[in-house]
Picture 1 (cartoon, rainbow, N blue to C red):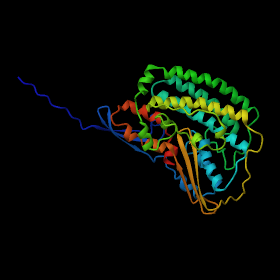
Picture 2: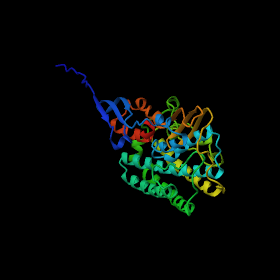
Picture 3: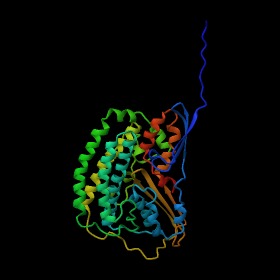
Length: 371
């Protein structure tokens, strides 16, 4: 008797991941086509958080728009404040006092630490390492206490303004910040021992979600995503702003392009941010923190473009002026938007469980995607 074999075929299944689920890191929906547990295609669906912020900014005076930027990358509000503040300064030929520039760099790097700690904790808990989530948020609470002492807020700060910052450091701030940094370096070493050498964590990250150098360039990747693929590109180095050209720090780069590389870039970036913060505290000159701007701010007709390095990558702001009180056009170049565009190219062929690791390693914030 001859046995014949037949190939069993399946029509596949459509799976909606999100739009409301902790692992989607925001209001994001991924429509994935499955063959068993293997991804065949992926279509990111965005727009659930769209508020028309750019259009709203065109109906308001320049400086009134700074609070809106807190709602873009809400994990790094100060970095978002800086993007539009620099664009306003360039279109209005405003010079920021030197101490104000140091304070802006200081605040942005503190906010970078807070943002990367959210990545570290959520990425770890997505992959089952709950302890690191608790530890990283413990450190973040101390950072938020410092930012609250400076700005009065813990998430949406509205503190970096066109012309500088409104007030100086509160009494004892430098000592509290230095004490935190002294302990934070040991906390980072602890995270390394818990995660980087963990066999289960490495198995979930190494070789998963590989983005080649060519793909990163083609899709406009920036920040830790690009640096995890071997691209040594950091706006703070290639086009320094404020006083970043006076700071000594390294740009962490890994060539593997996988989830592990992106994780290691961000951990090392926290060490470099701590270096920058210490330099700011040590070298900050005395003087004014805010330039004097007219009550009615009407920049001359023209255009301005501000490039900044947010925790997620290149966050840029474009402004157009016709000489009136309101900008005629406002547009933000949000890194998370470009990184989500990588998913349809990255996910086919991987398993469903790996989608969580890959999305977490991109560290997207949907506030700046939808705007």
